[in-house]
Image (cartoon, rainbow, N blue to C red; front, side, top):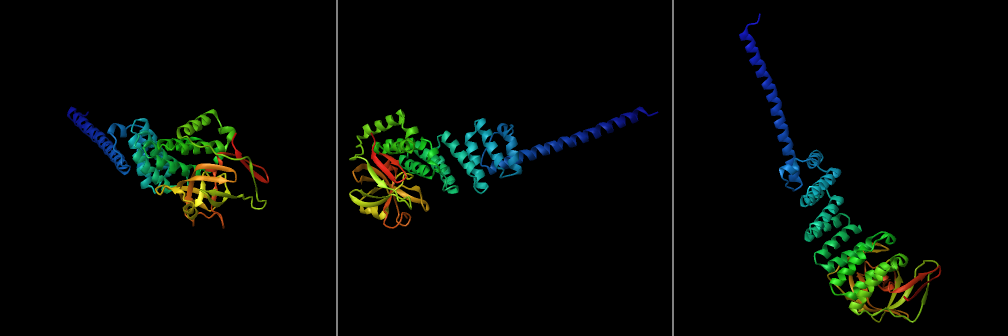
Length: 367
């Protein structure tokens, strides 16, 4: 028979052992929780964000922070974290997290793209410009970075810079048949903000000329008419239809034109948004150039830089247009061929009706 005192002793020992076991588990849990919290804090420091505890500990934010704690450059995790932070109203922190992730992980264009879009929503246009510029460094030949920076410039009150970036975005867009009107109309708005109503007509006319069947609408006609009236713009003139032969071998169309009264040998290029000229010829023809502008263009030899300008008159036989927008390139980049001064692009051609057949191109006044 076990004595009562021994039963009490065993009970005390059992309780004590139980407390030790439970206490050990509790302390381990405390240590684990503390370690998890410290890990999350470390990730937030890496991402340059500071979240309240209740937000950082809340699912799914905590889950994605933990993922980034395990894999610091997990692209899916940063995408999900940014989405989660936006959903709980921490948009600024979402943008910061994306920017820091890109910096820490050797450059990540999708994160920078997302950050710019978030900053535009926050109306932080200077920061949006800066981040879009970083995106352009990563993807210098992609149109999207220039488009996003153009939007930031336009909303931030820098219409000239916006025009440069809209022009570049349009020029770098791969398939003009699929391009939307957004950049063209935004470019027109930027010219309007500068009080340059006749220049504002150009991008809209160019958009229409890309696909008249689809784009020549009552809306685009109304926009063009409004800008034309405000600027008292002079319409293009011509004595009739002009016909030019297409070379059977090279399919190149060489044209003799005059720019500000100076003879120019040009190649017809409906894929070029602007009349593009060599710098030496532009100086000879006294083309006005904005020295502060910078645009990027697609050329036969790749991407080249240029500056925006305007020609008072451009004449092609009986066809004449005034105040024609021009892009001027340095002579070493403007490799159009021997004896060629530039490309006759849409800043002139969009004012006329242009049709092609197998042997000729016909240009005439719009009716």
